Length: 222
Image (cartoon, rainbow, N blue to C red; front, side, top):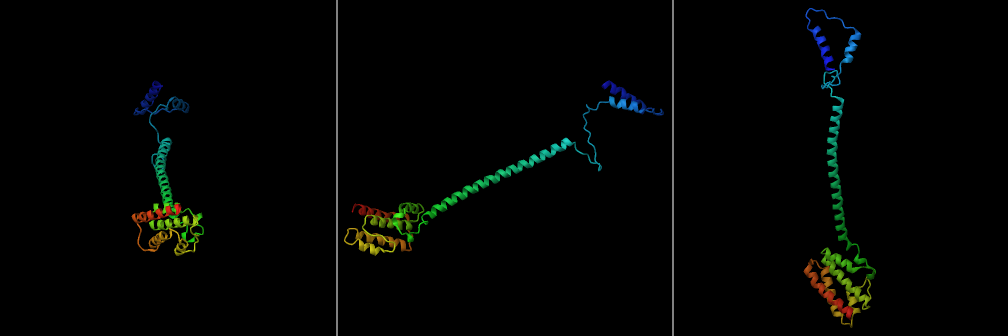
């Protein structure tokens, strides 16, 4: 192929550089034969046709590759943004879950209206007491301690508990028993703490709780 291409090139050069020589006419059959003998498959140069504006158009394959790389770049950016948004949503859900859990825990002790209790036996006072202590609501803890005492007195049939009865009524019901005087002191402590304006800290609560626990033992043993 290279030798044939060389002969054809010499043929055209001879006619191109002949100054006064008349260019011989090449008939159509000879042109078609020469064109068919040329092999352009091994040429390395990529021909890029120009558009009407004179700008060079990219090879379609290169143009498609450029678009693909550009699209992949944007896809990677959006993927990172998507992962960030997903992580933020997960963190938000966890935060709200923890917040709701804490809020619900704080409200558990308030879910029972102690002023509207009709039956002490239906209320888990021990659980409410534990929640009040966990929430550091020691005033409420003192009240629950006193209600536990009233509940125990009612269970042992030493008083007849009713929501409308006062502590003085319960004291009269304990008249003639060794529990009356101590009950008065316990009731006075409750009323002072619950209806007073001073705050109750942990030390004060545990001090009074010791007296309440001692009185509960006397109810059980007496």
